[in-house]
Length: 383
Image 1 (cartoon, rainbow, N blue to C red):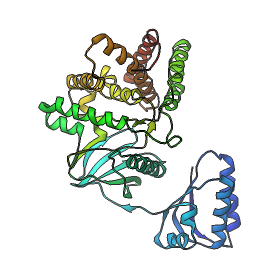
Image 2: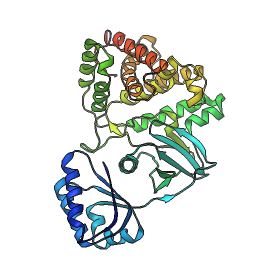
Image 3: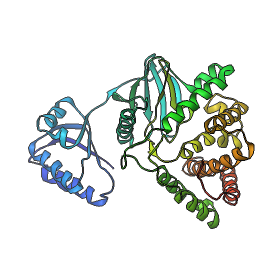
Image 4: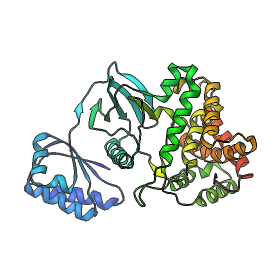
C-alpha cells in the first residue's frame, strides 16, 4: 500500500493527516504501508507525532521513501530514521545504450559500466522488494555465501532499481553463450558452487521455508488440477521435513555471476530454507519445461539452443547427485519434475499470456504431467 504525502504537514493540517493515515491502516493491518514523500516540502513535530501514532497502531516500523535531503535531515535530527524505515529520493539515471544482461518476471538487469550492474523492477512494490533483497543478501553474505549486496537505489523512467558492484562480471549463462565448447566445464563449475550454497545452514526463524512457498504455489493453481491430483501434491509437499539449508529460489545460471574469478549469487529476494529439490525444480523449469511447447524459448530468453538446454539439465542432475544409474536418475528426476510443474503452472497462471493459445497448451500439458507423476511418487525425499 503506497500513500502519497505532499506539501507541508504542520499543526494546521496534522489532524487531517492523522485521520487519513490511521484510516488507511485500519483498512488492512496486514499490509505494510509505504509513504511516498517525494512531494513533501516540510514536516513539523505535529506531523512527526502522527507518524509515531501510526507506528504504534501498526505495531512495527513502516517505510517513508523519496525524501528530499532537507526533509530527510528533519527525520534524522529528530531520531525518526531509527524509528521508521526512512530513505532519500533515489538518484535518477539513464539506461539508454546500456546492455541488457538478464530479464526476469519482476524486472531487467542492465550493465551500467564494466564494474556496475543495476536491476530495474517493474513492480509497484519495487522499493520494498529492493530492501527485502538487500536484507536477504546480507544474511547470506554473513553465512559465507558470495553474493552481491546493493549499495544504492536509483530510478529511471518511473521505475526503481538496485545497483550492484560486480567487477568484470559475466553470468554463467553468458559464459556458455560465448564459449559453447566449454559447456561441460562451466556446468560442472556451476553445479559445484550450487552444492556449496546448499550446504549453508541458516539460523532458525530467519528465513521462510521453501516448502511453504510451494504450498502457496499449489493454492494458486488448484483450479487447473483435478481434486485428486491437487490433494496428492499437497500431501507430498507437506510431508517434506523442516530443513535449515539455504534454498536460493531461482538459482539458474543467469543468477550466478563470475566476478573476479569467483562465482557470486544475485537476485536474493526469493531466499528460503529447505531441501535442495526446491532449487533444482527451478532449473528444470528454466531448461526443460519452458522448452516443451515453445522450442525457440531458450534462444529468446537464454540465447542457448534447445539441445544444449537438455544437455545442461542432464549434466546438472548427474553431477549434483553423482549418480549414473538410469533408474535412480529417473526416480530423482520425477520428484524434481513434480515440483517444477507446480511452479511452472503458477508462473503461467499469473502471467498476462495465460489465456493465449500457448498459455492454454502449457496449462493442459503441465496438468497432465502432474496427474501422471502423483501416480508413481510416494515422497519427495532424495537421499
